[in-house]
Image (cartoon, rainbow, N blue to C red):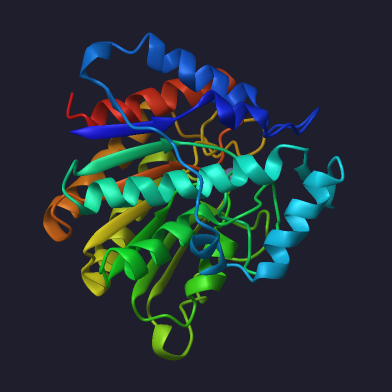
Length: 310
Ligand code: ZN
């Protein structure tokens, strides 16, 4: 079974004229309402993160900065990262929701969870927000699993069209968390070449699969599967976390790497196979990018259908 965690609260992070906007969550909630066999869906309440869950990844200064900008009525933390009056609370809710999902999965209440949250997280580095992301949700989830749930080895998979630079930064010299990102390259944020493989004890635990514009769907899927298998063998994870961005979709106005909706079903099944082999099926998926509303809703729908085993 798969538990879904989402809320209309995630629509309260206001970004104005911006591709990462509240409508993204709105279309996903509509998709869930009309989901085939809706009665089979299981939902859990979202919840605020404890401050210590966030400070396990970000220095307190960064939290306070986001909080202060929100309290002052909002502003911009970089050229494309917006904070509105509710953004600190909503970002804390996103971080708390992924921790709750980890707890549900690791206590055996469900083997999988899907968090439909915003703001996204994978560009946020420890010291500051970046690229639409305030707090690094997937990194917070990984640290929470290690510190509160007694899990050691974790594999983070990131199929967002952009490189998960923030996540890579957090775990670059960490031998316990293996990070695998497939992304368009060269592209924003500039990092993620294949020779970025980790540092110190973390050397060999970072796997980057850079994909050039125009790569065929088949080549993309082949490369994803090959490197995923390698990363999973190195990691032997007890838990898998997925940064699920859907901006590699052909229709996406930002990413446009050429994937079709059905390709997200294939990717999901590849991840589920690895979860069955290594982590007793334990997988927490969380939303990152995806900026074409209809393509996003359709892609998340097939992702969820595969998680449910349809
Ligand atoms: Zn992205």
